Image (cartoon, rainbow, N blue to C red; front, side, top):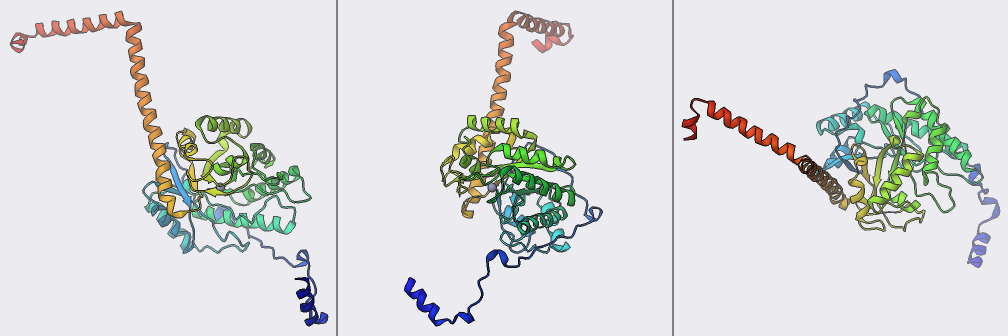
Length: 393
Ligand SMILES: [Zn+2]
């Protein structure tokens, strides 16, 4: 190989070679998002009224335009009533221009299919790092998020999911947390009504990814300006939790995880779940999704999670790798939720009956006497009725 390279070099005169350009010297475009006067946004749909229902969906594509997501989600079966999407390209900084016509068509499709706007959980592109030490990446991340937030606000959607950030080489975790909090404060200050949903992550081997532990979320939220802090929420991803090392394979495990979340972040901040199985082992710190039931987590996790009330009224988004399995995965999650409701209803009925039984056992005599009196009373009534004899005859 070395020889060949030498021959190549001989053929090419040095003078004609392009001067070596270091990656960092290349001019990098920065994008700026012009702010929109808050008064010019269309009215927001009223917030979803909790009705204890399940909101299950998948991360669908937007080729063909944002309105097509409604058709895509309805095609995933009668129990698919939620979705995630990238508002623009997930790999390029360049924002996508969304015309008013597209906004109107989206709303029409949402309303005619009776889909809740709060069941839509758009996802930030992975190129965004709100904790970036590099000023160009940081600014492009902030401006792209602002652009996306402006778009979702126009769509009538509130929630926007984002991985909290990565600690760059040369930066410390606390500094990165501060930068993320400043970015979140800025974007929420520039776009009204919307909610930044920080997604828990798998963490990483060298602890460079924020959001593996719940403490990271609490630290970021604490540093967000109080004027917008109410508009910061959290989404738990089942694969990321498992990969971080949380126990999510059983109901007991989930109860422990949620109780930890409650004491560190507060359950009132939890507003969505990403539902994925894992290609990697528990505590691997590697973010690799598998189809439900086809990974190292297993169905038990999803059955247990769907039995918990905390899942109701929150978007539950599948991000599994095989879209052909989505309709059945959604059906399975819905089925687990239904079974849990039925079980709870049966158990409630049994408890009421058992309670009634206990009352008559403990207060048996008094109850019994009452019954006798009632029967005697009605017997008296009958005998006092002039037609009673005829009736009895
Ligand atoms: Zn996720």
